[in-house]
Length: 290
Image 1 (cartoon, one colour):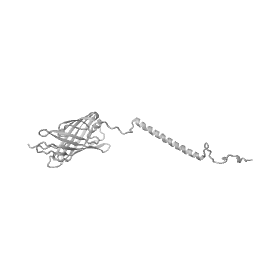
Image 2 (cartoon, one colour):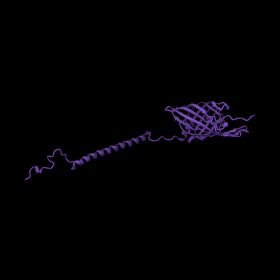
Image 3 (cartoon, helix red, strand yellow):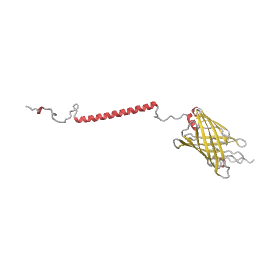
Image 4 (spheres, helix red, strand yellow):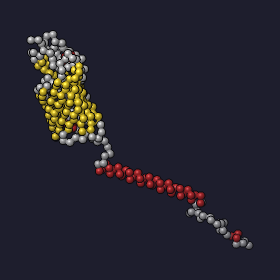
């Protein structure tokens, strides 16, 4: 007859035996716990991604900067090119035809001004704007025996220190210089010159109104050439039309005579008289002996 001990379940009397989990062996129970931790981590990652995506949608909906700013329209770009101290790299090519020259008023001088503008940021408050004018001149013969050279004129760099944050009045000031780089005597002064320069303007709606002025004196160069003391005062008035077109009026004073009107799309055309814009270009031409 079996004893009581022989009929007892196999796990009875075994201390510290962990009960099975729904019939799964204890070792499998440890794997299930690790699986639950992985599921919790995946759920946390999913929730974090959902919150980040929703935050991005909110930034787009509320206008928080999330994309590059829109490019300025053609009219604003045209106005910027009319600002002599704009913080914008540009290389204008200015064509000028000076007509009615010579004793019979039947000669035309062609003048191309290459005018690169390169700005530099000095700090949060100030910019340095470099403006250089290199003239290319085709000088006609005005009388018998006068040569008719074509080539480079004198190089005219200017430096303008300008506030980085301008108000209604935009201005700049600094030195201007002339280097005797002319390839022929008739195309330049033969002198090194320098002096102060300043520009001031305002932009009100479609209008750009201002003035540029400088004064230069020679301090070195060919001793046989005439000394230079030259003043340039140039007011300008621009009216901007749609799509980047504008009407420009330039009026010169001192060494600059006449009025120039031009219609262009970020360019200038017209009929200047003796001096083109922002540049004392052609030197005084010799006259025939009387």
